[in-house]
View 1 (cartoon, helix red, strand yellow):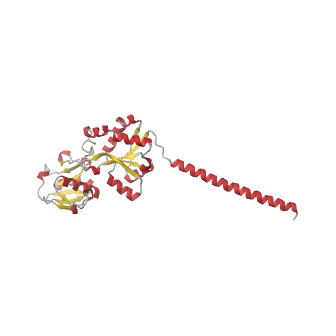
View 2 (spheres, helix red, strand yellow; view 1 turned 180 degrees about the vertical axis):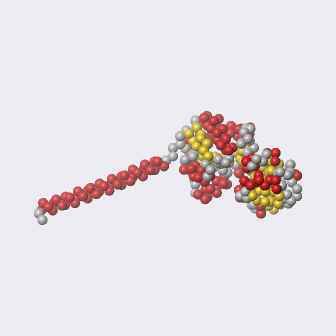
View 3 (cartoon, helix red, strand yellow; view 1 turned 90 degrees about the vertical axis):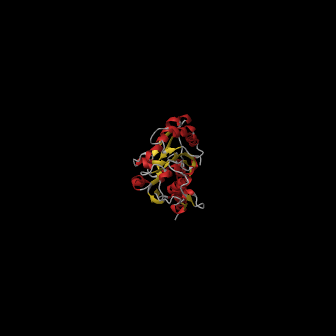
Length: 294
């Protein structure tokens, strides 16, 4: 082989290595650009229009957001859109991801269950309203008329059963085990029952349907309203415990966003409490109440 051919092959090899190096560098640069762009696309930028989630079955929650959107938000330079999503877990996911700015459908104990199960990074900022609770009877006109041994139905699910028993204890009707936190109390934790109530457990949605076959039932006003049970059948509407108040829940990483800070100011505005105290809207009055003191 001639010297010229050797030089030519060597030059070709160097050129090929150079081309390969350039291609590799181009691939690395392209990958880096794609990564940066993908990270940028994940960045949430809130505008002056914010979506706030409510539970679709709770029509009063939508009315609250609508009131805030019309009467309070404009003063803070915001537009608020009420968004109903039936799946509460997916709603919390949307808030954690920044698809929604906030949600108002849950108390802190339900939120804790969702966060523990799914790992969402969410923060309950402050309470904004409470769901009215009532003791209803189709047979008796007052708590004092409940006979010895009366059959009293409470919700079967843990959080709401605890709230029902807590209310009965606060009215002096029963006593709960002092070693058990009231919000997680179960029927088995009733240690004092001077009127020998017979407690039964049923799903919340079932309570209105069985009212005529028991002495009393304890549950949310909105469930009895939905079951066409008139408010006159309510023999006691005690203030619900503050710990079960609905929370304004926000994605933790967005708490310091300027628009989200404005949103917090909107829902903390005293006009919202005044609305809850004075409205005659049947979907809100007595169903969603101002936050109690204890």
